[in-house]
Length: 155
Image (cartoon, rainbow, N blue to C red; front, side, top):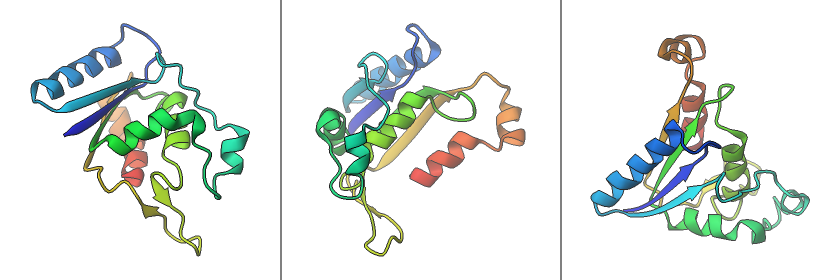
């Protein structure tokens, strides 16, 4: 399979970097094709530009994220590796979704503003590997697994 590994952690070394390297090694040993995007190391800018936001419903301006979109359209499997901070992913990963998973690429808006229509037909699997500084029971019992709930809405 064609696997896109997206890592979002500012420190190197870190547990997320170690997990990312292990995921890449495991996938390559299994003869999968891999592309790796380290959002921090690549200098990915997570905020929508004014031009991108203005074009959101009328042909999204993709010039600045063309490589990231190419990787997304190439992937059959996406592996997201990130820490959970403040009940969610780091802002840089949220920004990757905001700027790369856009109308005309990842989905189409319904003409009547109803449910969106998915476009990533080649995408078979999304895996999230996340670290958390709290005990497991805080995430499960008190917070009710917020990262899982958000990602389940996307996929």
